[in-house]
Length: 163
Image (cartoon, rainbow, N blue to C red; front, side, top):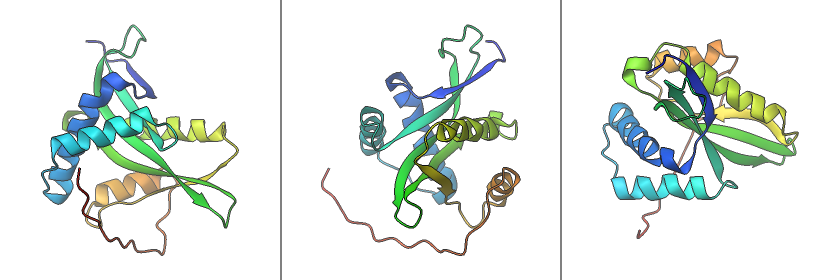
């Protein structure tokens, strides 16, 4: 396998990797075991409905340039309308890099890809993400890429849904 890496939008055939990454991230960060069928439906739902957002993947071993190597990292982007700015914030979520590939600049490349796409869309006014309070390595990475911590806390109320 080549050491070349390609960053590209995810395709339907990447769903298996994305489901696996989301489940592993939940185990690592929150010690949660997410139900595979629900995560799979969620991943496919986004892949099938670009109005909800998109995934970006890092593919290693793509010497042929066809995107068929091994997916080693990903992130998801969803949109939030800001009436204050008359534009969209792109929320970066579900960031995952396989452990053997961490600290090699893959997230930086994924983020640069997202920023380049946003530069082509006059409706995007900024980027946001949330990060675990204890994940200082990720926080330093985000700060090194120009992101700043905000003054906001995040609250939520979950609604149980029959799936």
